Figure 1 (tube, helix red, strand yellow):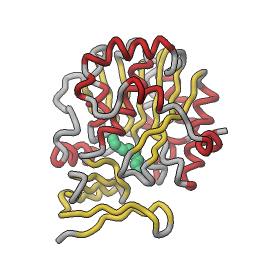
Figure 2: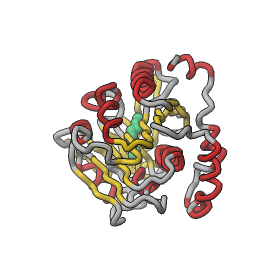
Figure 3: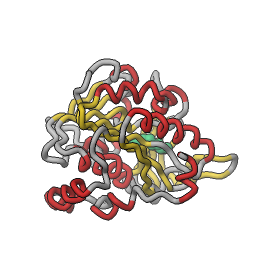
Length: 283
Ligand code: SPD
C-alpha cells in the first residue's frame, strides 16, 4: 500500500517522498539498510532512516564528489573511496582514462548488495579497475602510506560511527595515505541545517591545518535535507581553480562529457563560489 517516507531535519520539518512499496530491508551489524520504490524519484536507498541516494538525482552527488577532484589532480591513477558502497562514486571516477585502480572500502556488504539488486544502473561493479574491500574505512587509512592520488570520503551522515569521519585524526591519516600531489574530497552535509555546522567547521578546520589548499564547494541535491549540499576539498599542490586545471578540463572532458548530466567546466568553477552565510560557517 502506498505511504510516505519522511526524513525530518528539524522537529517536524523535513523531506517527504511518496513510496509505492518497500523493496529491501535489512538490519545489518552496522545499520539498517532500506530500498523503496518511490512515485517520483525511482528507487531510493536509506540508511538508518536517512536518504543516501535515489536513482533520479544520484548523478549530481556522484559527479560532484568525483570530477572536481579528478580534474584537479594532474594524473590520477590510484583512487581510494571510503564508503560509497552503492557504487555511484566509483562509476564516475572510472570514467577518467588515467585511473587504473579504485579501492572502495565499504564497511557493509548489504549496501553493495542492495544497490546491485535494486539500483542496477548506479554501480559499475564489473569494471576490472574496481576492488571492493569490506572493511572499516576509519581503520583502513591506518595502513597504506602515500599510496593514493585521490581520496573520496563518501560516507554517511555524522551520526553514530560516521562521526569519526568528520574529525581531524581521520584527515591526518588520509593526508598520510595521499601522494605528494594528492587531492581529497569529503561530503560535509547541508549548510542550511544548523546541527551540521559543527561537522562542516570541523572538517574545514582539519583540512586547512593539513593541506595548503582547503576549500568548500556546493551542489544541489533535491533529496538531501534542504537540497543544498557542501563538500570539503583539499589538495597538497594544485588549486582547483588554477588555469592548469581549467585547461585540463577543456582538453580531457570531451572524451566522456556526453555521459555527464551535471558536471561541466562552468559547474567546476561555479561550485566553489560560496554565499556569505556559508563563508561565515567556515570563517
Ligand atoms: N544525507 C546524505 C549523506 C550523504 C551520504 N553519502 C551518500 C552515499 C551515496 N553514494
